[in-house]
Image (cartoon, rainbow, N blue to C red; front, side, top):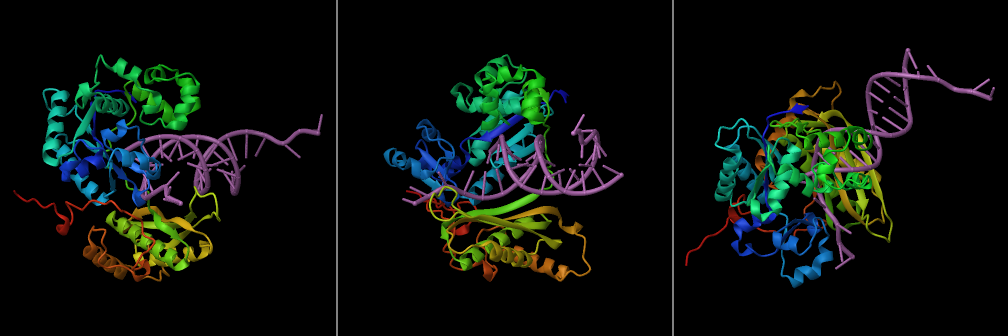
Length: 427
DNA sequence: TCTGGGGTCCTAGGACCC
DNA sequence: TCTGGGGTCCTAGGACCC
């Protein structure tokens, strides 16, 4: 940990999911738009017009029904196939500007600019912003600083302050002090609501005040994580660029049901489907899992009726990525934990102890013919591709799927399905 | 009356992120 | 009536051992 000459740029897509929808429907420009979470449950993306109406991130849709009606807010279900594809296009564009890049999330990337030959980081950022807009249609903001935490902070201000036109460089900047003064601790990267409360209780409100607080109290009350954040505010780099992310450790497929599941056959279908999706993800990562957990739960918000949560974890005889084997174990667990008379709201399959696929230790009494299973899975995956529409699937995953998660306002898969391509007509 | 101490490993749960 | 999903890391505390 030391002061360095890094220049971190955080590039963040503005209201990403909303912007994706706008690219393909110009009618949405300037209008209030929200995108909902799975099952059309919560608001997960808001256009500026909606933010101005005071709609908070994560609110349940049913709480803002009146507002939607009154302001004619356009409502979209989430379309992850579309957003994932748009994300890839944005990232590909960014990669042309800086060789050292970390894709931090679906809509954010850190770039290292100190090693990039250019007139100034600011000019580069402007050019990058314009190029991404031109090539993908997505508006982005750029924050630059000596550490990732400060770059995040810069980006936050760039987004909110019209004067910046979406680019703010706080590298050795006279504005840094003011930026820190204007930022509340709760808006810092790494400071969530619990930590913010703790800090506020001590009488500290601003990022600047937090930066100037003594290490002893920080370490004792906020742990090493808090201390790192404070160092980063001082310009001491604790988080480097992770251009090649370490292998994933766990993986999950969990979903809320479109309507409550009350029968064991329905629950078996759902869990089998989640297990098969988990298997496909696992193989895409070229990994195998040592353990599997299955859980079922009723609605936690529900006051009446029986409440039930249960889960079981099993260890596979040999780490596996075989869908049939995973479904088999998943169903056994389901039989064990399912309780008749409960209205289940959600279930999930979690895989842990992930190891590289070709690194699996064999087992003398392994009941499964591994080479054969590998070939079968490979064939299955090549037929199904990455499409969420599974052409070939296990019968156990159901046909009607009456319990399936709802998406009542989904936009077309403009970029990934031939039959849903945007049509352009003249005249 | 007075009941060690310190190390390691593992796990569950909390906090955070988007 | 209606409240998402998928990750990471850290820490406290228990089990176990000598």
